[in-house]
Image (cartoon, rainbow, N blue to C red; front, side, top):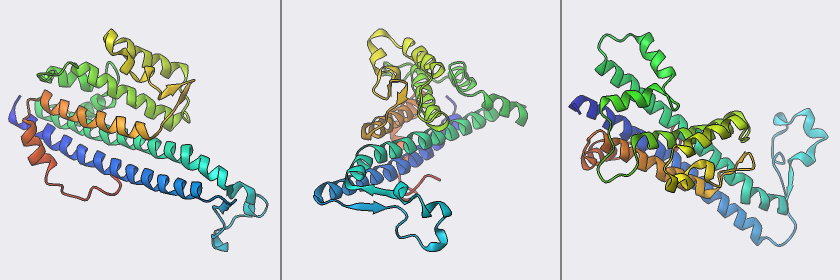
Length: 268
């Protein structure tokens, strides 16, 4: 693998890792706040109420508020339910959606940089066309990277195709959350089953189609989703770095450390 390609891969995946860690830390701190709030309401043994519009200035009030106050008022029991399930789901949902946006952005930037480096004379329109069809089982990105020389790192059992497939599964979950209100329809289910079937028999249980995340045609998210996806992203980035014959120690010290920005805050 040539030096320029390695520099591009290392730099972009270093920046990608930083953005993913910022997003994870923000999400984890929100979960911490949710746990503290839930514990507070759990410790209060008297009936209590909370109105989400109770302290709003009159200039922010709507005509609807005059006859639908009950829509904005929650009992202690309702608050416990919300902070136990709904709030956690929303944080995990935000993490899934934004993490895919981050990963997509850097993979597309990687594609553009490497296309311009290795395919001399390629036009901007041609690059845009290739990037448009970057993802999916037959996506142009995976074919390009494999043709470029991306190879299974030593001591790894997963092939590059398996890593790409796992990311496509996450992208399908993101699609359900962003565009289908968390519903896993037949089309998405079939696609998830295709990725499951592409796995060796002893690994099928690790597919998203076999996980708790997809159940009864719905996407279910909890604390564990955040931790599972965080680990997968970081492991996948290490895989990519090694697959391009980049020294992991050099990647860590040069493109990942020292931290150039705070790891608290959004990635936007």
